[in-house]
Image 1: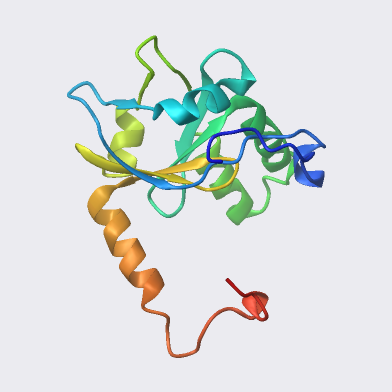
Image 2 (image 1 turned 90 degrees about the vertical axis):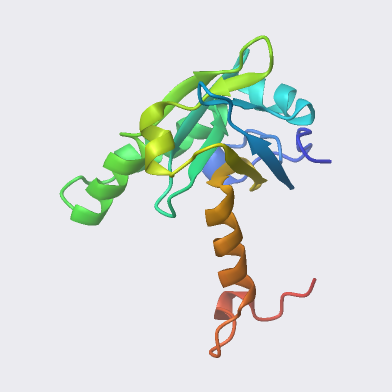
Length: 168
């Protein structure tokens, strides 16, 4: 079920730690102060890194990524262990770690999306929270609709070869 902890141990990228699995799309609204109400079914799982400890950061797709702290830390450590002499790596380090912000779930179950991250992702009032396994993506609703339309348009050259044999 969405928001519940996965009983299986995490893979090599998680250091054997089991993280919650998030699924589903939820339409939300940011309040006038830029706060986002976390759906009740996900609050406990998101807080697994400690009471309300989350990390919110930028994604190259112009959405935001929301991680439980325990899921974010190995990603940050791996990213920062890479050579900053490579321009592409350094750019990703600047984006992902530079924009990373610790956010807390308040007593009303909300997080404050910092103004710099709201500007980066063009978040206004209407947003979409999208479960993506061990994290969430937070999108401006109009950008999410455009992204979804692009995804289901399937280009003439078909799906990537990595998806060969995948059945749903």
